[in-house]
Image (cartoon, rainbow, N blue to C red; front, side):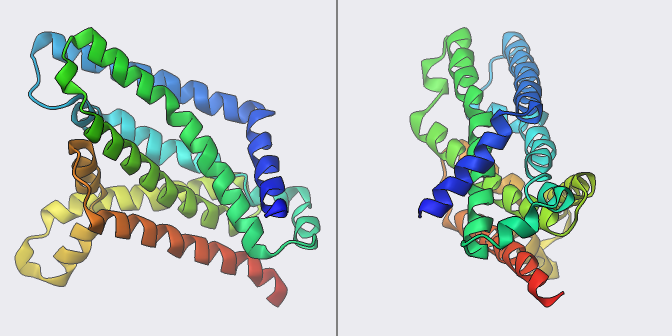
Length: 250
């Protein structure tokens, strides 16, 4: 546990002592601000019958931050270590490969959560500006935060795997972006494939993160969505672990 906490603190510190972490947070704040401004303008023109969390989910802001920011967060996790030559030193330290993978994953996940914290303030500000106390349901807010967290876990895990496969941070970011974008686009395929097709429709429907996030934003906690997101996270962490362990075979 001591080694895990030490490595997690080391990885988390690397986000906060370099310009990359602050640039990511600043960019996310800028995009969230644009989304908030758009919602305010839309509500001024026409009152909405949906909750604030559902309105926020329907904007491009959430998906833009999720698909674009997570590859930037994860691209350096393993690729930078390999490029700088410190990866082998880290791997020869008295810690297991699993501890290294989990420490890097949780550090990136903590930074991801830190990145999204301003969203809570913006949602409450939007609630105040619209003067509709019932438009921000505590239950819907809790499930929305859970959905953002679970989706972040999956996307961070995909980024970890992409970073473990290469020495180039750019290639790692591109790989994570392609994986994340593919999962995002699979949600649209779920609407295009009719139920009569059979198992392809069921598979795509299970992978439909749009519908999963819509349910979370409405305050609906679907165990199928939770199982899918957690299962995907464990799968990509397992692939990351095997990628890290593969150095022993070379």
